[in-house]
Length: 336
View 1 (cartoon, rainbow, N blue to C red):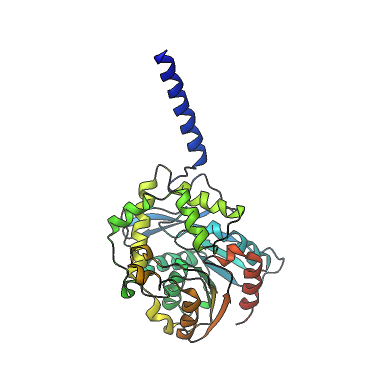
View 2 (cartoon, rainbow, N blue to C red):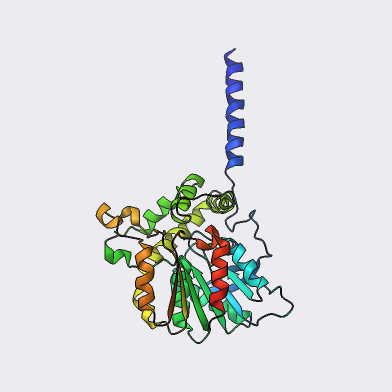
């Protein structure tokens, strides 16, 4: 009788484990198993004494006669080239060629064992890709961490950037100077190993979508949770930790005044993103990530800035209300 009970218990545990495994996806270290809406290409480059592959999307304009302009999309920390899905479609339908890379360390690109992450390095990688594709004049759209990278790229190659668009960029304040304590890469790594779908979903609901949740957002939770749940999750977490350290230690706020090209700043004012906010003392924490204030302050720092605010949106307006966002974006892109 005891043997039978143990057998039933074992069967129950196996079935339960199977259900849990089904509920939690497990993608490859380079997001194998999760598909984007367009074919993914790979650019091989030598960087920091190693051969790496940078995945990217190259989507041609759908109109019979293109407008001759190219847009480069720079994703955020918890985003990928694929999360620009709706934006790519809209831009392509409007006559733009769209290049959307996965930066090294992210998504479908290489996850190096060792890499000195700097925004200069990521900008150089992207510049090398554009050179390979024969592209020398672009509009850059950077979201979240991609806004910091887009700023760095525009400072390094101002002659190549005809317009810079930043969508809820982070780095509009210097968290370290404001009192967010530093933690080591090893501590970031331990935090990243604990990433799961529930934590991702709750964070995105509160920050990206201003407390709202729609079924279509679940796809991006699955993407990120699956990437952090596969056999290569330690490599994913380690690169993520290095990238968090880069974001924390390399502010761009002090150089906004050096941007010479027209800059469009799109801000969902309900955003409250701030790296390391949970590490800060309560009295400091409540002052961080106030995008209703940060957007205005940043627009005053940039010589040729145009500020557009969405007062009912959070960190990802292009995903929360794509119709309103893209209508605004296309209108502003026509203004040189």
